[in-house]
Length: 619
Image (cartoon, rainbow, N blue to C red):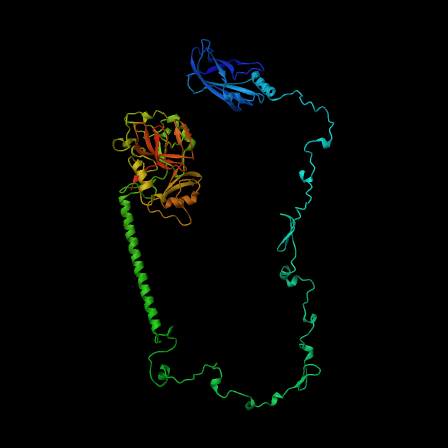
């Protein structure tokens, strides 16, 4: 397209007199030329006029659009404002103001040409409006016949204040109303808000601690002995006489001459004493007595519960415990035998599963139901392509994305970076449409389809499926090992399989936002947590080490890798779209959409939009 030029001819104010009503607008003229200086004559153009305040990039205070024709000289003329209320509200005294004109030479609203200039001549008619409004609202002539000079007494003033209550009490002095004294408990209120807490003679002092009283007594000698109790100095012994004081005494008996028989109620029987020696008080005859009478017990009787020699006797409790221990040992041996059998069985079953479902490189361990009868494994990462060497691979980690490298896809065969956003069915299969290349950037959606009504990437059109037609170097490197899930399979996986709502949720893995899908037999690794949520990427956050444990348990992570239109990539790390193998019509297909509060299988994408691809293989 040729670059066009705009030349402003004039800005003409529609001025009125000071006392007349000023038209709300002014004439604006401009000439449109091409780069050769030739006039764009008799051309229908789209024009947008904006008035900016303060600078050439200032706030827009007024804007209007026109569709108008240039004359033979490439000139167009419009009235800016045209009695608009928005234009009338402009305060022209609060300038400077700039006028910005934009032109679409095709007559539409795609304004590709622009110029901005300062308005040097303020529309004076609008100043006149301000002057007229002042003159109409104010009478500057003095019409008061009584006021000429200050000569009046205070008493002659009408409504002169006569009471202190008419003045503001800025000194905060107290009035009788303020001194409204009343008691509430131990509190004296002076007014509604000022109070003093008083000590209480009746109740307050009962709460005083003894130790807090100054000079409180600490010794009995500080009190008057009105009980006449005796002290140590009042008791003395002299010979056989016990003196309580100087006048009171008792003569003690000579205890060395007391006879046993003279002691009242002295014990006479052994049963009156405590048997601390443990002697036998009642005669019994037991096994020990029999053995002592020359009979043979054929063994030793010692500790019946813990025999130590081969001929020791034992009790029933010992025999019961021995039998229980033997049974437990036998059960443990049987359990060990069954465990060995289970291990052998599991090894055989594992070997059988390996034969039935051979593992190929790039396969994750989790098993996912995508229909009532179909299970799949996911690939180790998103599908990637390097145009320069025409090579397909899986990303090294599930959280790896190409990001802005997708912008290089327009270089086609010269692009040496890995890209991971592809138009619908761009496996590289040339099925006749001529637009099946992975690096295709055309935005004409119909050029991506094999037929007018579109086709799913199955059966005859399976060649357009990224995993069917192409060997993947770190995914088995053979054709037809991988495929893309259909719309119904995505729907079953996310919404219909048992416990589906608990087996999915938003997350961030190694700083990359995205979506986690968990396998059918999910068991969260010890020390980690997972919360099913569709509202925030920050609910489940894992570093590389934690994610390695999640991945080993079968978890799948779909990074929000953005999308591509033409060769421009947007929304990297914000949202993601994953193609299904199912079409909607001749220009659109279904995808799984990832975004906070908007994760859905109802998303419909134009074939030309670059989306992510995550492949699976049947289990």
